[in-house]
Image (cartoon, rainbow, N blue to C red; front, side):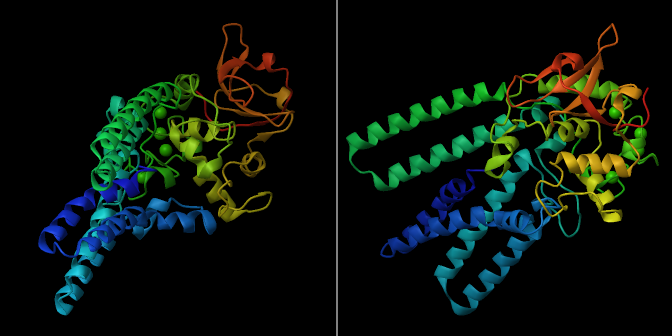
Length: 399
Ligand SMILES: [Ca+2]
Ligand SMILES: [Ca+2]
Ligand SMILES: [Ca+2]
Ligand SMILES: [Ca+2]
Protein backbone atom coordinates (compact mmCIF):
# COMPACT_ATOMS: atom_id res chain seq x y z
CA UNK A 1 0.00 0.00 0.00
CA UNK A 2 1.21 3.49 -0.79
CA UNK A 3 -1.32 6.17 0.10
CA UNK A 4 -3.86 4.81 2.57
CA UNK A 5 -1.66 3.73 5.48
CA UNK A 6 -2.63 6.73 7.62
CA UNK A 7 -6.40 6.44 7.00
CA UNK A 8 -6.31 2.69 7.71
CA UNK A 9 -4.45 3.31 10.97
CA UNK A 10 -7.11 5.87 11.87
CA UNK A 11 -10.00 3.51 11.10
CA UNK A 12 -8.58 0.54 12.99
CA UNK A 13 -7.78 2.72 16.01
CA UNK A 14 -11.48 3.65 16.24
CA UNK A 15 -11.95 0.40 18.18
CA UNK A 16 -9.43 1.59 20.78
CA UNK A 17 -11.01 5.04 20.91
CA UNK A 18 -14.42 3.51 21.57
CA UNK A 19 -12.97 1.30 24.29
CA UNK A 20 -11.31 4.34 25.85
CA UNK A 21 -14.49 6.44 25.84
CA UNK A 22 -16.49 3.58 27.30
CA UNK A 23 -14.05 3.34 30.15
CA UNK A 24 -13.41 7.06 30.65
CA UNK A 25 -16.52 8.87 29.32
CA UNK A 26 -15.26 12.15 30.74
CA UNK A 27 -11.96 12.06 28.90
CA UNK A 28 -13.30 11.96 25.35
CA UNK A 29 -10.64 14.28 24.01
CA UNK A 30 -7.88 11.72 24.49
CA UNK A 31 -9.89 9.46 22.19
CA UNK A 32 -9.04 11.79 19.32
CA UNK A 33 -5.38 11.70 20.30
CA UNK A 34 -5.54 7.91 20.02
CA UNK A 35 -6.79 8.24 16.43
CA UNK A 36 -3.92 10.60 15.63
CA UNK A 37 -1.42 8.19 17.20
CA UNK A 38 -2.93 5.32 15.19
CA UNK A 39 -2.48 7.40 12.03
CA UNK A 40 1.11 8.20 12.98
CA UNK A 41 1.89 4.55 13.77
CA UNK A 42 0.48 3.51 10.41
CA UNK A 43 2.82 5.76 8.45
CA UNK A 44 5.80 5.35 10.78
CA UNK A 45 7.43 2.27 9.12
CA UNK A 46 7.97 4.34 5.96
CA UNK A 47 10.39 6.56 7.90
CA UNK A 48 13.05 4.39 6.22
CA UNK A 49 12.09 6.03 2.90
CA UNK A 50 13.82 9.17 4.17
CA UNK A 51 17.05 7.22 4.49
CA UNK A 52 16.44 5.66 1.08
CA UNK A 53 15.80 8.90 -0.81
CA UNK A 54 18.03 11.28 1.12
CA UNK A 55 20.99 9.11 1.93
CA UNK A 56 21.38 5.74 0.28
CA UNK A 57 19.14 4.27 -2.40
CA UNK A 58 21.23 1.18 -3.06
CA UNK A 59 18.98 -1.31 -1.24
CA UNK A 60 15.27 -1.83 -0.72
CA UNK A 61 13.73 0.32 1.98
CA UNK A 62 11.82 -2.75 3.12
CA UNK A 63 15.13 -4.30 4.11
CA UNK A 64 15.27 -2.09 7.19
CA UNK A 65 14.21 -3.15 10.66
CA UNK A 66 11.50 -0.46 10.49
CA UNK A 67 9.61 -2.83 8.16
CA UNK A 68 9.78 -5.84 10.50
CA UNK A 69 7.22 -6.82 13.18
CA UNK A 70 9.91 -7.52 15.80
CA UNK A 71 10.61 -3.81 16.29
CA UNK A 72 7.00 -3.01 17.07
CA UNK A 73 6.58 -6.07 19.28
CA UNK A 74 9.47 -4.59 21.23
CA UNK A 75 7.74 -1.20 21.38
CA UNK A 76 4.54 -2.93 22.54
CA UNK A 77 6.28 -4.88 25.31
CA UNK A 78 8.33 -1.90 26.54
CA UNK A 79 5.37 0.50 26.33
CA UNK A 80 3.05 -1.87 28.23
CA UNK A 81 5.72 -2.51 30.84
CA UNK A 82 6.30 1.19 31.51
CA UNK A 83 2.53 1.84 31.53
CA UNK A 84 2.03 -0.99 34.01
CA UNK A 85 4.86 0.16 36.29
CA UNK A 86 3.67 3.79 36.25
CA UNK A 87 -0.03 2.80 36.22
CA UNK A 88 -0.49 5.10 33.25
CA UNK A 89 -3.52 3.97 31.22
CA UNK A 90 -3.07 6.75 28.68
CA UNK A 91 0.38 5.43 27.84
CA UNK A 92 -1.05 1.92 27.64
CA UNK A 93 -3.72 2.96 25.13
CA UNK A 94 -1.24 5.12 23.20
CA UNK A 95 1.11 2.13 22.92
CA UNK A 96 -1.75 -0.03 21.66
CA UNK A 97 -2.77 2.65 19.13
CA UNK A 98 0.77 3.10 17.81
CA UNK A 99 1.51 -0.61 17.45
CA UNK A 100 -1.91 -1.30 15.97
CA UNK A 101 -1.13 1.36 13.34
CA UNK A 102 2.26 -0.16 12.55
CA UNK A 103 0.67 -3.63 12.33
CA UNK A 104 -1.80 -2.42 9.68
CA UNK A 105 1.09 -0.89 7.74
CA UNK A 106 3.13 -4.09 7.68
CA UNK A 107 0.10 -6.23 6.89
CA UNK A 108 -1.00 -4.11 3.93
CA UNK A 109 2.59 -3.88 2.66
CA UNK A 110 2.33 -7.58 1.89
CA UNK A 111 -0.23 -6.84 -0.83
CA UNK A 112 2.04 -5.47 -3.53
CA UNK A 113 5.27 -6.00 -1.71
CA UNK A 114 6.73 -8.46 0.68
CA UNK A 115 8.20 -7.97 4.12
CA UNK A 116 10.48 -9.92 6.43
CA UNK A 117 7.77 -11.14 8.81
CA UNK A 118 9.99 -13.44 10.86
CA UNK A 119 13.11 -11.25 11.02
CA UNK A 120 15.60 -11.83 12.73
CA UNK A 121 14.77 -15.56 12.78
CA UNK A 122 14.42 -15.66 9.03
CA UNK A 123 15.53 -13.16 6.40
CA UNK A 124 12.87 -14.31 3.96
CA UNK A 125 10.29 -11.93 2.57
CA UNK A 126 6.65 -12.92 2.59
CA UNK A 127 3.63 -11.46 0.82
CA UNK A 128 0.58 -12.25 -1.25
CA UNK A 129 2.83 -12.64 -4.31
CA UNK A 130 4.04 -15.88 -2.68
CA UNK A 131 0.84 -17.56 -3.81
CA UNK A 132 2.38 -17.55 -7.32
CA UNK A 133 -1.01 -17.61 -8.99
CA UNK A 134 -0.78 -15.69 -12.20
CA UNK A 135 -4.24 -14.15 -11.82
CA UNK A 136 -3.19 -12.82 -8.43
CA UNK A 137 0.38 -11.74 -9.11
CA UNK A 138 -0.47 -9.89 -12.32
CA UNK A 139 -3.34 -7.97 -10.72
CA UNK A 140 -1.67 -7.03 -7.46
CA UNK A 141 -1.74 -3.34 -8.34
CA UNK A 142 -5.48 -3.50 -8.92
CA UNK A 143 -6.08 -5.26 -5.60
CA UNK A 144 -3.75 -2.85 -3.87
CA UNK A 145 -5.46 0.28 -5.10
CA UNK A 146 -8.90 -1.19 -4.55
CA UNK A 147 -7.81 -1.76 -0.97
CA UNK A 148 -6.49 1.81 -0.77
CA UNK A 149 -9.85 3.08 -2.06
CA UNK A 150 -11.76 1.03 0.51
CA UNK A 151 -9.51 2.36 3.29
CA UNK A 152 -10.09 5.96 2.18
CA UNK A 153 -13.83 5.32 1.92
CA UNK A 154 -14.06 4.03 5.47
CA UNK A 155 -11.83 6.82 6.71
CA UNK A 156 -14.12 9.52 5.30
CA UNK A 157 -17.16 7.55 6.41
CA UNK A 158 -15.76 7.38 9.96
CA UNK A 159 -15.07 11.14 9.92
CA UNK A 160 -18.63 11.68 8.75
CA UNK A 161 -19.98 9.64 11.66
CA UNK A 162 -17.71 11.43 14.10
CA UNK A 163 -18.11 15.02 13.04
CA UNK A 164 -21.32 15.50 11.03
CA UNK A 165 -24.49 15.43 13.12
CA UNK A 166 -26.91 17.22 10.82
CA UNK A 167 -28.94 14.46 9.07
CA UNK A 168 -29.35 16.34 5.81
CA UNK A 169 -25.62 17.19 5.52
CA UNK A 170 -24.83 13.61 6.50
CA UNK A 171 -26.99 12.23 3.68
CA UNK A 172 -25.52 14.61 1.09
CA UNK A 173 -21.90 13.96 2.06
CA UNK A 174 -22.48 10.20 2.16
CA UNK A 175 -24.01 10.28 -1.35
CA UNK A 176 -21.04 12.25 -2.66
CA UNK A 177 -18.68 9.82 -0.97
CA UNK A 178 -20.39 6.82 -2.56
CA UNK A 179 -20.31 8.49 -5.98
CA UNK A 180 -16.61 9.33 -5.66
CA UNK A 181 -15.89 5.77 -4.57
CA UNK A 182 -17.79 4.33 -7.55
CA UNK A 183 -16.01 6.72 -9.94
CA UNK A 184 -12.68 5.77 -8.36
CA UNK A 185 -13.30 2.04 -8.87
CA UNK A 186 -14.32 2.67 -12.49
CA UNK A 187 -11.16 4.73 -13.13
CA UNK A 188 -9.05 2.07 -11.49
CA UNK A 189 -10.52 -0.55 -13.80
CA UNK A 190 -9.63 1.64 -16.79
CA UNK A 191 -6.13 2.30 -15.47
CA UNK A 192 -5.67 -1.38 -14.82
CA UNK A 193 -5.88 -2.00 -18.57
CA UNK A 194 -2.89 0.28 -19.11
CA UNK A 195 -0.44 -0.61 -16.39
CA UNK A 196 2.22 -3.26 -16.54
CA UNK A 197 0.84 -6.72 -15.77
CA UNK A 198 3.70 -8.86 -16.88
CA UNK A 199 5.30 -11.66 -14.95
CA UNK A 200 7.93 -10.92 -12.37
CA UNK A 201 10.41 -13.34 -11.01
CA UNK A 202 9.54 -13.16 -7.36
CA UNK A 203 11.88 -10.27 -6.62
CA UNK A 204 12.02 -11.10 -2.92
CA UNK A 205 11.83 -14.88 -3.29
CA UNK A 206 14.82 -17.15 -3.05
CA UNK A 207 14.32 -19.58 -5.93
CA UNK A 208 17.45 -21.63 -5.31
CA UNK A 209 17.15 -21.48 -1.50
CA UNK A 210 20.74 -20.32 -1.05
CA UNK A 211 19.83 -17.58 1.42
CA UNK A 212 20.11 -14.82 -1.20
CA UNK A 213 16.89 -13.28 -2.45
CA UNK A 214 16.48 -13.34 -6.22
CA UNK A 215 17.02 -9.63 -6.64
CA UNK A 216 20.51 -9.82 -5.15
CA UNK A 217 21.38 -13.30 -6.37
CA UNK A 218 23.71 -13.06 -9.34
CA UNK A 219 23.02 -16.76 -9.96
CA UNK A 220 19.30 -16.88 -9.36
CA UNK A 221 18.66 -20.53 -10.22
CA UNK A 222 21.84 -21.76 -8.50
CA UNK A 223 23.13 -23.75 -11.46
CA UNK A 224 26.61 -22.23 -11.16
CA UNK A 225 26.16 -19.99 -14.22
CA UNK A 226 25.86 -16.26 -13.63
CA UNK A 227 22.46 -14.79 -14.61
CA UNK A 228 23.89 -12.74 -17.47
CA UNK A 229 25.79 -15.77 -18.86
CA UNK A 230 22.97 -18.24 -18.34
CA UNK A 231 20.80 -19.40 -21.26
CA UNK A 232 17.92 -19.77 -18.81
CA UNK A 233 18.64 -17.40 -15.91
CA UNK A 234 15.56 -18.13 -13.82
CA UNK A 235 15.74 -21.88 -14.43
CA UNK A 236 12.10 -22.23 -15.54
CA UNK A 237 13.20 -24.24 -18.59
CA UNK A 238 12.35 -21.42 -20.98
CA UNK A 239 15.34 -19.69 -22.51
CA UNK A 240 15.92 -16.00 -21.83
CA UNK A 241 15.52 -15.28 -25.54
CA UNK A 242 12.15 -17.04 -25.71
CA UNK A 243 10.97 -15.23 -22.59
CA UNK A 244 12.08 -11.81 -23.87
CA UNK A 245 10.06 -12.41 -27.05
CA UNK A 246 6.99 -13.38 -25.01
CA UNK A 247 7.31 -10.91 -22.16
CA UNK A 248 7.89 -7.85 -24.32
CA UNK A 249 4.23 -8.20 -25.36
CA UNK A 250 3.16 -7.32 -21.81
CA UNK A 251 4.42 -3.77 -22.36
CA UNK A 252 2.31 -2.96 -25.38
CA UNK A 253 -0.89 -1.64 -23.75
CA UNK A 254 1.04 0.17 -20.99
CA UNK A 255 0.90 3.96 -20.67
CA UNK A 256 4.06 6.03 -20.63
CA UNK A 257 5.02 7.66 -17.32
CA UNK A 258 5.13 11.29 -18.41
CA UNK A 259 6.65 12.28 -15.07
CA UNK A 260 9.75 10.28 -16.13
CA UNK A 261 10.01 8.49 -12.81
CA UNK A 262 9.01 11.62 -10.88
CA UNK A 263 6.78 11.99 -7.82
CA UNK A 264 9.11 9.63 -5.93
CA UNK A 265 8.41 7.09 -8.68
CA UNK A 266 4.78 6.63 -7.66
CA UNK A 267 3.45 6.56 -11.27
CA UNK A 268 6.11 4.00 -12.04
CA UNK A 269 5.19 1.95 -8.99
CA UNK A 270 1.60 2.18 -10.25
CA UNK A 271 2.78 0.28 -13.30
CA UNK A 272 3.40 3.01 -15.86
CA UNK A 273 6.69 2.87 -17.70
CA UNK A 274 9.52 5.07 -18.95
CA UNK A 275 12.14 4.47 -21.62
CA UNK A 276 14.94 4.02 -19.13
CA UNK A 277 13.01 1.62 -16.86
CA UNK A 278 11.77 -0.66 -19.64
CA UNK A 279 15.01 -2.66 -20.08
CA UNK A 280 15.38 -3.30 -16.34
CA UNK A 281 11.79 -4.42 -16.07
CA UNK A 282 12.03 -6.61 -19.17
CA UNK A 283 15.30 -8.28 -18.13
CA UNK A 284 13.82 -8.72 -14.64
CA UNK A 285 11.14 -10.98 -16.13
CA UNK A 286 13.80 -13.50 -17.17
CA UNK A 287 15.76 -13.29 -13.94
CA UNK A 288 18.45 -10.70 -14.69
CA UNK A 289 18.43 -7.78 -12.27
CA UNK A 290 20.27 -4.83 -13.75
CA UNK A 291 20.49 -2.74 -10.61
CA UNK A 292 22.32 -5.46 -8.74
CA UNK A 293 24.52 -6.27 -11.74
CA UNK A 294 25.52 -2.61 -11.95
CA UNK A 295 26.12 -2.42 -8.21
CA UNK A 296 28.30 -5.50 -8.31
CA UNK A 297 30.34 -4.08 -11.18
CA UNK A 298 30.60 -0.65 -9.55
CA UNK A 299 32.02 -2.27 -6.41
CA UNK A 300 34.88 -3.71 -8.48
CA UNK A 301 35.38 -0.85 -10.90
CA UNK A 302 33.58 2.48 -10.50
CA UNK A 303 35.35 4.09 -13.48
CA UNK A 304 32.97 5.46 -16.07
CA UNK A 305 29.85 5.47 -13.90
CA UNK A 306 28.33 8.94 -13.88
CA UNK A 307 26.03 8.23 -10.93
CA UNK A 308 26.97 6.17 -7.82
CA UNK A 309 24.75 3.35 -6.43
CA UNK A 310 23.61 5.64 -3.63
CA UNK A 311 21.81 7.77 -6.24
CA UNK A 312 18.21 6.70 -6.88
CA UNK A 313 18.87 7.04 -10.64
CA UNK A 314 21.97 4.85 -10.59
CA UNK A 315 20.17 2.11 -12.53
CA UNK A 316 18.13 4.61 -14.56
CA UNK A 317 20.96 6.18 -16.48
CA UNK A 318 21.94 5.41 -20.04
CA UNK A 319 25.63 6.23 -19.47
CA UNK A 320 25.75 3.86 -16.50
CA UNK A 321 24.23 1.10 -18.65
CA UNK A 322 26.88 1.67 -21.28
CA UNK A 323 29.64 1.62 -18.69
CA UNK A 324 28.40 -1.70 -17.37
CA UNK A 325 28.32 -3.24 -20.85
CA UNK A 326 31.81 -1.84 -21.56
CA UNK A 327 33.28 -3.21 -18.32
CA UNK A 328 31.93 -6.65 -19.12
CA UNK A 329 33.29 -6.53 -22.66
CA UNK A 330 29.77 -6.50 -24.09
CA UNK A 331 29.55 -3.06 -25.65
CA UNK A 332 29.83 -3.04 -29.40
CA UNK A 333 30.48 0.46 -30.68
CA UNK A 334 30.47 -0.57 -34.30
CA UNK A 335 27.06 -2.19 -34.15
CA UNK A 336 26.59 -2.51 -37.90
CA UNK A 337 29.42 -5.06 -37.91
CA UNK A 338 27.62 -7.65 -35.80
CA UNK A 339 24.22 -9.23 -35.71
CA UNK A 340 21.39 -8.16 -33.45
CA UNK A 341 20.26 -10.78 -30.96
CA UNK A 342 17.20 -11.01 -28.76
CA UNK A 343 17.71 -8.97 -25.59
CA UNK A 344 20.35 -6.62 -27.01
CA UNK A 345 20.08 -3.08 -25.70
CA UNK A 346 20.49 -0.67 -28.59
CA UNK A 347 21.73 2.87 -27.96
CA UNK A 348 20.44 5.17 -30.70
CA UNK A 349 21.87 8.41 -32.05
CA UNK A 350 18.96 10.40 -30.59
CA UNK A 351 19.79 9.16 -27.08
CA UNK A 352 16.82 6.78 -27.14
CA UNK A 353 17.21 3.18 -25.97
CA UNK A 354 15.36 0.16 -27.35
CA UNK A 355 15.63 -3.57 -26.71
CA UNK A 356 15.65 -6.23 -29.43
CA UNK A 357 12.49 -8.26 -28.91
CA UNK A 358 12.16 -10.31 -32.09
CA UNK A 359 12.64 -10.66 -35.81
CA UNK A 360 10.28 -10.59 -38.75
CA UNK A 361 10.06 -13.51 -41.15
CA UNK A 362 12.26 -11.54 -43.53
CA UNK A 363 14.91 -11.11 -40.84
CA UNK A 364 14.23 -7.52 -39.88
CA UNK A 365 15.00 -6.62 -36.28
CA UNK A 366 12.00 -5.88 -34.07
CA UNK A 367 12.53 -3.68 -31.05
CA UNK A 368 10.44 -2.76 -28.02
CA UNK A 369 10.10 0.99 -28.37
CA UNK A 370 9.06 2.85 -25.22
CA UNK A 371 9.08 6.53 -26.09
CA UNK A 372 7.44 9.49 -24.42
CA UNK A 373 6.06 10.84 -27.70
CA UNK A 374 4.44 7.71 -29.10
CA UNK A 375 2.48 4.66 -28.04
CA UNK A 376 4.55 1.82 -26.73
CA UNK A 377 5.12 -0.44 -29.72
CA UNK A 378 7.08 -3.33 -31.04
CA UNK A 379 8.37 -1.97 -34.34
CA UNK A 380 11.03 -2.73 -36.89
CA UNK A 381 14.28 -1.02 -36.05
CA UNK A 382 14.42 0.52 -39.51
CA UNK A 383 11.11 2.31 -39.09
CA UNK A 384 12.53 4.35 -36.21
CA UNK A 385 14.84 6.24 -38.61
CA UNK A 386 17.43 6.48 -35.88
CA UNK A 387 20.98 5.23 -36.14
CA UNK A 388 22.29 2.60 -33.74
CA UNK A 389 25.53 3.93 -32.25
CA UNK A 390 26.20 1.19 -29.71
CA UNK A 391 24.91 -2.26 -28.86
CA UNK A 392 24.92 -3.81 -25.41
CA UNK A 393 24.88 -7.61 -25.46
CA UNK A 394 22.78 -8.45 -22.44
CA UNK A 395 22.89 -12.20 -22.97
CA UNK A 396 26.03 -13.99 -24.03
CA UNK A 397 24.35 -17.19 -24.95
CA UNK A 398 21.48 -17.55 -27.32
CA UNK A 399 19.39 -20.57 -28.09
CA1 LIG B 1 18.90 -17.32 -4.17
CA1 LIG C 1 22.26 -19.48 -13.20
CA1 LIG D 1 20.04 -21.65 -15.63
CA1 LIG E 1 13.73 -18.79 -18.18
